Image (tube, rainbow, N blue to C red; front, top):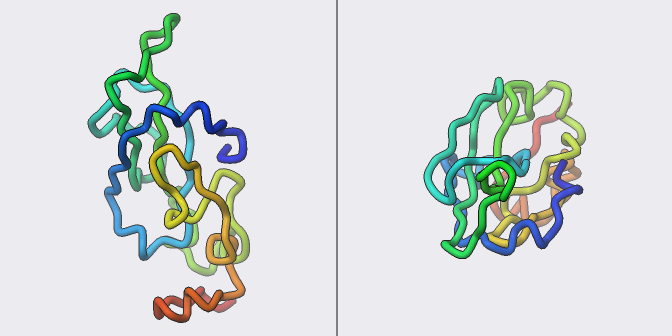
Length: 134
């Protein structure tokens, strides 16, 4: 869950790679995955789609036990709001979801009115973005 990610686990992030246009997404799910490399697009085996991932700097050390690196992966489930605007998450968002506009390398991001399903903020109106109506 997003709330369980500790700032110390993000200290070696050097960048984020977005595979989708985050201006169109109200939220993304984020998780810390154990991956075999510091960089590059990781393999993804969830029944969903990857929206982005973190890249680590050369100072990042692998786990002594597994030889893997902790890296953030950003993703969306098939039943998330962008795919099913009137679905389960029309109001609210999953616990591991954050507004992608609040995410940066080494910053885990947070929920916003937008990510939680409204009401629409002034910033949303300025961007010309609206939430689905129930």
